[in-house]
Length: 93
Length: 471
Image (tube, rainbow over all chains, first blue to last red; front, side, top):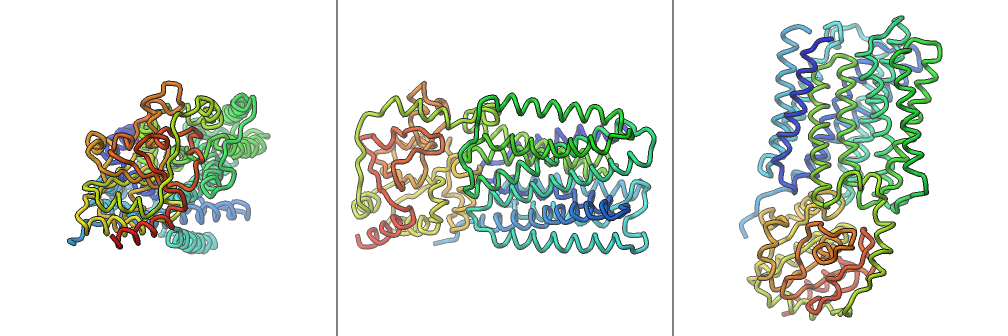
């Protein structure tokens, strides 16, 4: 196995910890929602397996994976954006 | 992977990291989300197969039609969910999207496993292990998230427990791990497909069994945990199909989600094991109720409460889940605007776990256009609570319960609270005297300087607004 991949994996763990440790609690829900959208990258996993799928069962399951992944990624980013557009600076009274 | 594709994926990883980083400040959060989405688009265009060829350079086939149709259906479903959901129901929407991601991760791993076990005599362990991991974690995240969604929708909110439950769950887990262990070595054996299906089904069941005993109040922790699970499943899929972008994105979500889960538990002063295996609330309730509480409850009418508010100098509002249920955030803003016009200094005290998710209150109040510099976090506002004239508690209960400070036997003893009991006077808006999610009595309601304003938060607030305007 390519050890570079393990290297990337370990570094990503630390980056994930570092980046989030500075988030104020008021942004935790949008953050959870935003990271939820990022793991929607599984859509691409679905696309990759479906391109190579042969037989109706594999095609059906791959299709479901693509639908799920697509809903995860699009819905995730949209719902996060909807939450965040409400964080506005105080308007002058 | 060609050098160009490698470079593109470094860029994608950077966009995800910058996106999460920007999400950590209110000023840049919205841009951060868009930056992460941009990373997703770049990764989509650069999508390549394991052999290094671009996915988009192959001839069109039925499978590509299926992909296009699947993406469009997902887009429509996702957009419909995202734009139709009420702000109060946001947590369960996140749970649902997370569950779909987990399901996709499990399916991707399953299909890869099926293909490899058919194509090769011996499948290397470093390929099967991540596949089995992604299948297990993804499917339990899928079924667990659905249960969390249903619980937040008000279906079987109460924890479901029976004797020997943890034992049974442990047993199921052992069987799952045993099957997985056997499959690592025998991926191409005759019974492999059956073993795999049994393992998949048990993992789905385990997700349900894991979340059912946990009460509705702890769902935020569960969703956060399942979110990080899905991230890890996606990372494992990345290992299995050799996709660096998936490894980076999944791992980032996995580690940040784990930390967020721990932060949430810390705010409730409970170890994460207690949330997951404790079946809190069912046992704690009887214990505290037996203690009894001294003092009497003093109800107050809206017009009297309005007088207290209108002639105060400093008012602090403590919102809780009751405000979310009553959809009262707009009325809250109207009231505080009205008080602000009269020169009353109004602030909001936000407990880290008020509502159903950390930041839930902030999102709701932001929807009602409450400026976020009026929202003060618990640690900042507590030292000055004894200089507050009126503390208005709207649908919050456990997060203002002084038992957390005073009573060692209380199940919430030691949990940081907003110290509403130290204010000169307190008005608690509540539907009834029912206990909060922790199932324990709130001593605050019995204090001498506390008045209870019973009724639906929205209706009561409308009365308050009218009464303040008259004065």
